[in-house]
Length: 176
Ligand SMILES: NC(=O)c1ccc[n+]([C@@H]2O[C@H](COP(=O)([O-])OP(=O)(O)OC[C@H]3O[C@@H](n4cnc5c(N)ncnc54)[C@H](O)[C@@H]3O)[C@@H](O)[C@H]2O)c1
Image: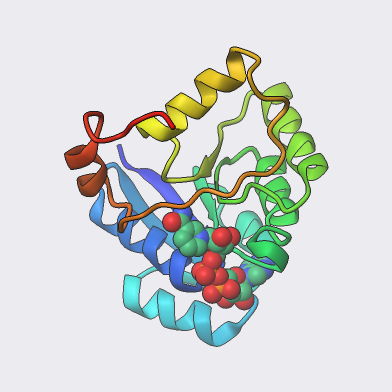
């Protein structure tokens, strides 16, 4: 049975999440939400689902929702993630939050702790996690070659799609 999915924050990336849910037979897009009514209405019309302008109203009105994508942005693109992600978790939803998980690592830790303690799924959509460069960086971290990672600038020299990665990895990637 398809998971019932909702998207909060209908900018460019929220619309991408909605498109992915629409195209995936394991998902059923049931609701979109944006503080800006026109954005929510436009997406709801495009994707054929319900529109909401307040996340909590959506969560109360549609208890059947299984998964919530948080695709809001804010300062440094992550300052508006914590509250909507915590709200969805507090309603016992699985949450997929856009990168960066939060703009402040202390908020991120609260979010992760809350999800772990309540045995809820929480994932951060950073599409470069499962790549050779990221694996190499993690290996160095685990080997104690770098300290706790709190900030990282990552330059990707190509368009970054899964297709591009699969063509270049692992032969072309060299540890610096
Ligand atoms: N994974 C990727 O490849 C990728 C690529 C680009 C952007 N992003 C991330 O996606 C996120 C969104 O980026 P964007 O460019 O679509 O942003 P955007 O500013 O265009 O859209 C965000 C939307 O969220 C709405 N919003 C904000 N707070 C809300 C709330 N509490 N409830 C409901 N709606 C709310 C805003 O009104 C806006 O329409 C950012 O965090 C960004 O870092 C990820």
